Length: 134
Image (tube, rainbow, N blue to C red; front, side):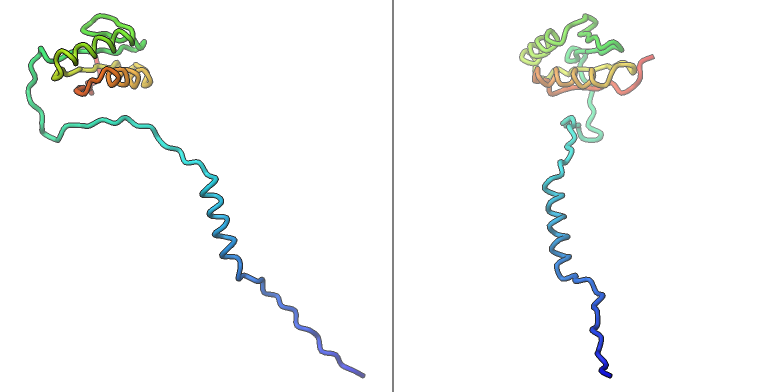
């Protein structure tokens, strides 16, 4: 009787190329993924404690009500009229400060559009009212 030797079966999984596959998958997902970039307001704020009194003649009050209407010193204006008046005011007196008062019930998008319109008019000095109106 002839006894034959059984062959040993290897049960290990070959892993010498797993690192290459993992890096290729990582590169694939990094290249194919789109990243969400947030659009933010670019505001330069004054240094802490740098407040000083401002003459009332240098302040232009702009209000935004709950319906999105803009008021320039109490006069209701369209977006284009507001941009024109603001640009004229800045050209005449660059140190003018635009005091923006926003109703707590106003839409955030209207507020951002108002700030964009002021930026379009090249307004650089904006004071934002941070207390809710009664």
